[in-house]
Image (tube, rainbow, N blue to C red; front, top):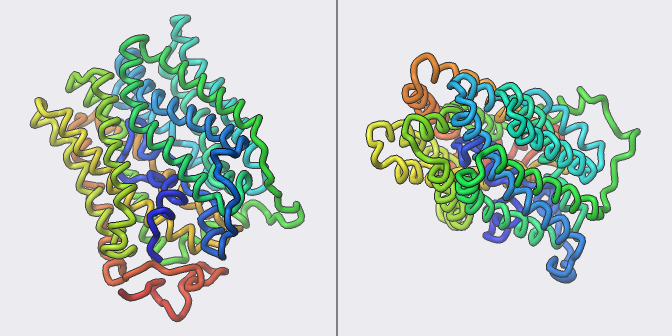
Length: 480
């Protein structure tokens, strides 16, 4: 089912960079959360007409303002921490790899049980505690720097704590909106949240680079701490109407986790999507881990210019969000997946190519990341729409957690590997290995049945128990 422009923009755009196969920021391949349960709810029946605009909903505006500030603050820290490690603490390639791994290790360690746990808890309460933990952990870095005792192991610990808190915050955030607004207002709510995320991606890195040049990286982090506190306060004053499942409906944790994994891997199309995304994320950690060293140390790019690269590249993501409905309508929802995968698979080749043309480093990096941002948006809007559409509401949290466990769980392993390779064989050769690996990763969707399909299946074409296509659609596909 092809998405209309408003459906893509409002419901799934919040997931646009989820499980990104090409890094769209300097700190991780993905800095956005996935779509919430609203999409699945909307596709299972007619939504009632919303009453009034959310501009007059004080409760939603309170939550939105906090989220907007924290998203902007996160962009500053995503630049400040690598700069702090590379320029202030003189981190080696291996140490930057360990730092990157620490930042995403939580998805491998607690990613699976987090989905099942959060299905049993009040989502807003989880987010409140996660914001408080993130603010306290991050606030330790400027304090240690002020005392003159900051070391790399301190940064590792903070990254680990931040990673765990972010897992719980993001998975909870996926399901918060339906408990805040009327069902018919979900699209408007997600559209507003995504608009602030896009603006943060456009302005945050450049502002962060300028700020680091003025007050130094450790103290620029204080701005992010302030925004997490603001989000914490906003969530305290936000009201929700979430109803938890009765305790007697809970299955053993292992069984619930297994149910989510089975749903994902029994579907042949989801298996291919997970294969491409996971492998591309693994090899994408080459650029995520080594780019700060390559740009800041070997190319001599300033922190301000480094941040500007990602602000300009974020325009590609914005254009991708706008263009996705039109591209899907033109070539078909199914074909958009291999087309976008091939494009973002080849975009990383431009990064190590910069070594041959250092005078053109900035424009080449902007082009590489802009192409990556555009095509990742196209890829993720399409595949997230598909999987949210076919997944029963009761399994949405576990489905998302299962996929994240695989496609994000490989990232700390990749970070450690490419950190070691960067130190052993050099940064540029390691970047070439990562870029070539991302091209190879496209094989799962590029050689699959997507090319001969027009649209991806709907919920009624997938067995709700097993996740397998119904007998009428043996490949889970509808012919063009």
